[in-house]
Image 1 (cartoon, rainbow over the protein chains, first blue to last red):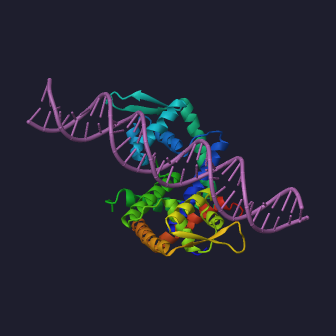
Image 2 (cartoon, rainbow over the protein chains, first blue to last red):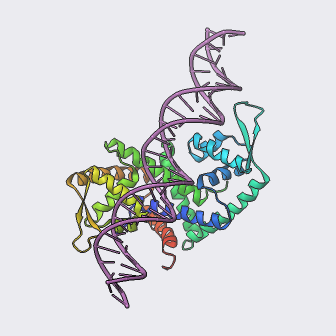
Image 3 (cartoon, protein in one colour):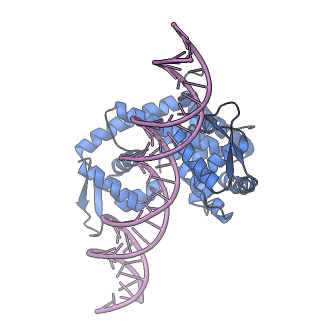
Length: 145
Length: 145
DNA sequence: GCAATTGATTGATAGTGTCAACTAAATGTC
DNA sequence: GACATTTAGTTGACACTATCAATCAATTGC
């Protein structure tokens, strides 16, 4: 293989990561698609957030978030409560069960990342993440810098 | 959140890249999904390859490749020819039109990569790609290294 | 020759991404 | 206060992506 292009590299990495995370998740006994997991993570990270704020943070379509939330609520991992300041929206919080699941997911992810980055040291990883964000920023916020 | 996690960074980057590539592709006047593009790229990169070898190179399901190839052949961008050494498989080659399209796609991709990496210098980019591949390898070929 | 393997195809299904239409509440303007 | 506009969320539709299992024909190993 000559020199891999950036696009190939990104695709391979994405795929490897998702695959690994899925495996880890299943060995933890959880069966949730990646989008749901990331949504749950969003709620746990910022309890009291709204669907809107999650959609923005994740840069995903709000329709997708709505559906993921419906499933998470159906599974008893998240609850909606009325937003006293705006009756259009509801505040989102993880349930006790949601927090337990989140802890499992954290373990799975940590293990996945560890396996993925086994040949990188901390500073390499840090600069990798920094470069990733720099690139993503260049697109998502073309005005900055 | 302290620093962005690896998973967030990879997700963001993946999306940013796909989005950008799509845009570039459309401004070139081509309307093909990313998987088809990558498949065409595979054929152009290694004319005379088989569906199998593309699937392996791209680490994708062979069913997906079959379907993408059917579309590409239907669009007249790729042709199959009999493999004299194995009548089960066919050799794949781009048509003249396929090569033209590929050139357009190369331009689109180059532009996307350039925009994406505008804040990175060459050596940073190189080490980014190297790290990506290192991580992907750690999963895809857990035995190596 | 016959079993096992391999390249390719097909069908089915789940997950992801995107767009547009829609409801209801909130806000701005006169 | 009545109106248009904007905003949060929901719903429907559809294209794209990923994955698995079954099938078929050609090849390979015995």
